[in-house]
Length: 532
Image (cartoon, rainbow, N blue to C red):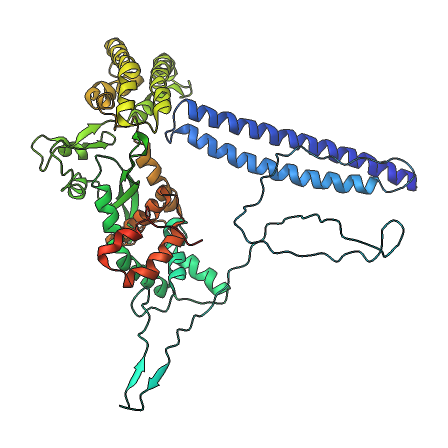
């Protein structure tokens, strides 16, 4: 009977090992598919198109595959251990899948030494004559649960024996007037709400479970007070963005509560990022909120910009609301329109990737080769741009003149010839018309080294808000939308300057109440350095 049990355990261990091997291969396939998708995304465009969705899906599949493989490996090891117990029949070796080398844990984290009890006698002969000759260290990453505390600011009061007057240290500045929340707590609330998209009601529930009940109305009051206190910094960032020679502009829909239902409002973004052409000025992003998508809103946002007579470049899609910005009679100066090649490429890419099914299949099948050819021609321009990213404006212009200009001329000539052969109902005709009607705007990058080929900087800035609106559902009011835009401006600019938004917000809330307005520039995210 023992022999039969051992044999069955061995068979089970072998089955578990084979299952673990299969799941390990599945994990490897998922990993390779993800890498291939990322490489294709880099080669054929960096815009937020279908390939971005495919990468997200593959990342999720990889996470699930790794979890399944790890669980199967543990089960296989346990089965092998059971079968390897001396039962008189057979021993089965456990299965161990190949894993990537683990990166060392961050050096900046504090280390806590836990010294295990030393042996009292030799493991081999039993002698107690032991001498330490070294040590082995195994590191484990651990986290300390969040701790709440109450900080008491004690101001001792003294009486004067000479005049019987009282003397006392002045009261410390609070982050918000008459507030009882410290700057770190306020910064966490702001970042959770606008950086991690956790609504205040969920935050209140979590705080209550941790033994610190805070009313939802109190949290909302603190958010409003913080927005008011941080307004000077948002104004400084706005002035910095609108002093650029080139900005990216875009917008995204945002639900706005309106009499028991929601309507579609807009969140506008204006990004200053001079790094692609080697600019020394720091990057920043400005957000604005409006209840409609009327062209009056960008007109109001940019009414005093640009300040130079030569105008400034604005990179945006072909939204009609921007048209008045390019009028020659505009004061103080008209903008120079630079069209987005990523938008144009996406129109062809979507046609090239459409499934050939149904009654419209023949039309799609006829249009796909033209769309694919257009994508390949545009990708040649993006390949050149990747090589000169970060170079100076003059160097970029020289490369574009020698390499890109001919490609652009050939592309528009080819589209013009092909467009004459197509009917207006052809799927690819609209994509060609989009570019042919705006050839001057698409060619701006050939005459100005500051211009970029795409408007992806603006699209990247809007991505967090587009993801977050699924969590917070809607903006409660116009004022709430304006407040969100203000905090988005601060958090987005902090991220562009590679600093921790929550730590920087805490520093601002700590020092801004007593900070001279003339030195506010010192607290800007591009000048701020975290304490060591």
